[in-house]
Length: 348
Ligand code: AMP
Ligand code: MG
Image 1 (cartoon, protein in one colour):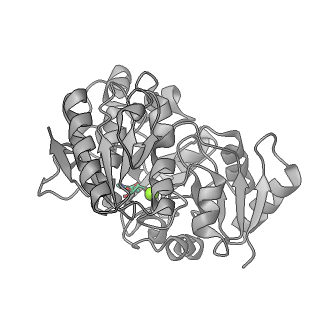
Image 2 (tube, rainbow, N blue to C red):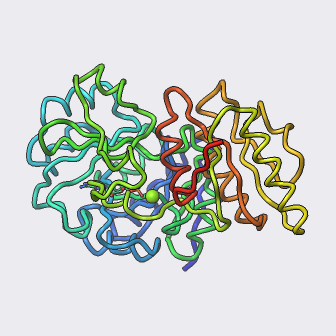
């Protein structure tokens, strides 16, 4: 299959957008930019189309997809009830990086929800995404547009690297703004619960609806419980090289990583280092990459996956990373980093 790449970085091309809509309505796959990461879209109400997403990504079929909508009124057609909290959160954060879980209506096939009676719904804040959702019939199932187990794509080039020849079309909207996936909140049972941390953090949610809980599996690496978002179970976002996160006082972290760099260099290896703008010049060798400035959290989340992908191309022997427990986005960033590192964390 020849994958069409449509450049919509500066403006939306109406003819190509109509073509994307036609592909989606006919059961095909179109990747598209959102404010979080690139999504791989299919008609959410067409089970066969949803199955194609799993095939293209190599995604386990029990890992449900998020349904993307472009208008609030469309929510009511696919969910049983819309709790008051959901209305308030949608008012405040939609379109935006927040996904909410509801009891699904029959019209949503189990192929889309991974066999669950609940459905995850989000309205993304990106003009290309909103236009494409409408053109494609209003309900677009979309996970991140990467091969399962690879870092999520934050540019159209990342999507092409993983999906070229496997999907009909990629809409190029340039680099994304946030860079980590949406916050997922479960509103289908009792107390609203965060199942995946994202840009919209606990404090922001609590300001709108009061007390919010956090799925305990997010807080502890060796928690025996199963996460409620099936996707959080899988080893995600893994770079090819073994990765270790080094936590502690900045000076201790730098000293420890420098020792490890020396060891690797002596063995004739090239280690990778994930640093920040403030510390990158303090490392004594290896491939040092900055995620961004610690005074600008979004610069860090935005670069996270691109840095991991770059290391895959450079074939480093291993990766040592600083920790990024930043004030607002820290939980979302570290959730992805810790998974990329397969939970290998060293405290110094
Ligand atoms: P992705 O779109 O690749 O970022 O993955 C979507 C995430 O949403 C995965 O972690 C899924 O497990 C989660 N998810 C989707 N639908 C549901 C649902 N009905 N209940 C719980 N988690 C869900
Ligand atoms: Mg994903």
